[in-house]
Figure (tube, rainbow, N blue to C red):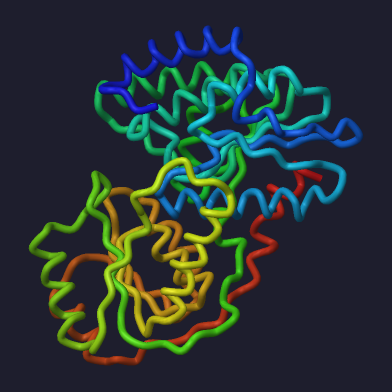
Length: 352
């Protein structure tokens, strides 16, 4: 479902959406709706190889099941089946059902196709409560970004019962400024609601988990310096990105990949990363971590939720001397996970 540009994507998506109404369900043909329960649907469920987004989907599903209990059944709409999913939900939705969209960092013009599908879901279900789980507001200051924001304002402010959750204070302020007709909440990234510290594993060596995409802030020279410092100080060094080359994963495959990366982190003396969910995975597995910033505010401000944990170390700016001093100290702390439950109370309240 990836096209050459946003315009062609929109045209093709609308055309395929029109045709979908004449087709039978394929992916959802075995999905049974329990008529004795209400349903909560999760749009944009990540079935692709970004393990940060996969973890968000996993944590969001768990959170909804924990809060709503047996009164609701949770049904995922994978992003690769959004067309069919929209019609499947339209056919089955009833009063009292809840629509949610996956949290993350795709609220903006950087990931325009995902933003478009979320807006389409918001427009499609005006009579039901719609909850956009913890997101980063990331509309650029470019002409394209301003145009995209104008469209988003129109869509989101038109929904009569929309709740938008920000995962950092900057996003919270911007959502309040531009989406003033929606209910705006503030909680941490939903993955921070997990605890994957146990079972504990023996730790040895370091893991490097660095971005190679459009959100990268470090230069290649800086990245090479960091890698060389790590290799000089650890006998074993493993490269493990949160982005893997897999698509259309089922739920079992997704959970298997999450367990792999969490166990890898739990087996490391130190993880060095500039990925937001690299840092978050370190926190939930209680793994010592050195974090570098990406090109927006989401790493820095998410760190503010967990900065009391001594094993998460954010490097505010690239500085060779400070990096050398950090590795020389070799005093990598194992912190104590704080109880994040109360921080999600605003989200619990609207689900209760």
